[in-house]
Length: 88
Image 1: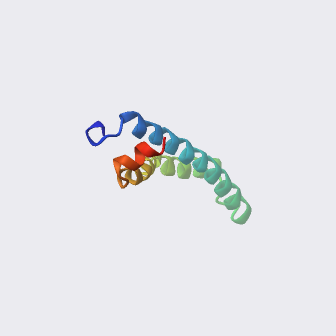
Image 2: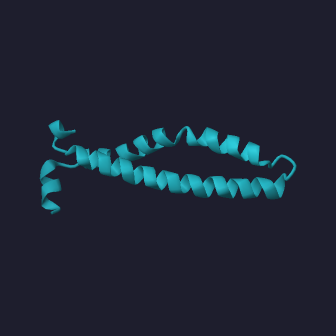
């Protein structure tokens, strides 16, 4: 990243920010989906099935955080370096 004028800290910042957003969305989504399934189809809503589904979705969190971090970095790269300096 430094070869194109962006410090590595910029990517790490976006990576951490993206991870926080996705973990929060994951927690809300897993809880909401568990409640919805328990209300609609209570006979299949067990703690084991909920944990299995939550685990399957959790496997994708690192990939989603990395891709989510690349979006703002890509937008930064689309700007001219002079424009980035002028924003200070």
